[in-house]
Length: 163
Image 1 (spheres, helix red, strand yellow):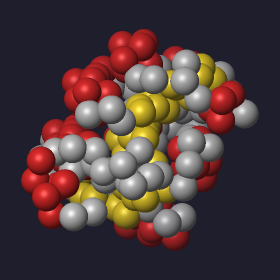
Image 2: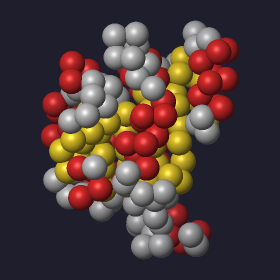
Image 3: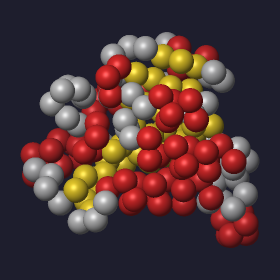
Image 4: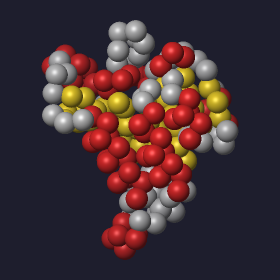
């Protein structure tokens, strides 16, 4: 991407792939029994991954961090609000046109504005829910497509999400 593209906020027509952002505290809960490999596979069904980030708070265990890194996730630890850091990073990626698809794994309605922002830049969006009872309908409805890790898929604009 040329510097001019980045500064203008235009989506780079050559930018491809999927940027996966995982809201760790809301997805990696005992009641959902989510496997990070399943989250990765749901995003990869949309295209090649350009980034795979797991956001955690300062209370994350070293074992969780090590397991995520072993699965190819870039782990982002924040002492502040995980949601804010993830939202800012995802919005920055959208503004810079650094992906074709933004995939957010969360059950948090707070990410609806990020999905809407990415849609405004012409970026396809995918909401990945940790399970039927962990799904945000508002987030799902704002996204172009959605996947519920218990197997339910909804692909408004993507045949690959229905796999």
